[in-house]
Length: 314
Image (cartoon, rainbow, N blue to C red):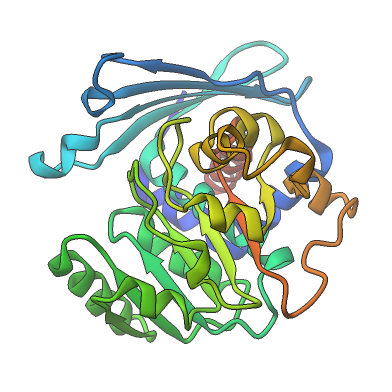
């Protein structure tokens, strides 16, 4: 069994290649049972969550990801999300590769958002608002820049010093990046708003959204977490990575449904539909689009296969 290090994963999972790999996987499909989702302390979600995500393509590859989400890890100087990935031969069951799932997960998550943006964001989208400044944030900026001409990046974070650090990092990469203290003002001028937080209260308000904006929601991954209010869900054309995850696990959608602001039939499409040309995505420059990602084992499998095959060719 090969151990694939983070540096090898990063080199193999360049955003254009990974976005294309996800597009192919959503087109062809695979078997992915609904992920196991376990609260380590049902009385207090801040104590942690365990996710178990299997997926396979018969006769090809089988993959299994385990993830821990520890919201209080920021105070410990550790990533909130950590995990491992095992890739097997789906014919004989042999273990082929072991990899730290952290780098794989952030890159595939960012690439799924970028894949969605390739269908949903205006083609001339150049101003991105990044809400959150954790490990996911720079990946989301880079991935979106692989599919849209992103030049200006505003960064908002509840801890301003982290927003400043991320803005400096992105500036050195060639973006016109800056931290913003006023989230409402920044949201009102953005072409794309990407959120990657662990918020349980709405951060983005529907009445802040300008015509033509695309909203990308990554952070809220349980039915009690959310990054937007009901108004944003109600006025936007809503898309998800998978219908099962979006309708059952995405707090932004689940809570809006409970409030009567959204119904299952209001969901426009998922990434399967978009990649298979069963839905056109954005249909006008004035349309407000919203993509909610909960993560799918299919995405991990596509990324792990790409990383494994790239390193086997060395």
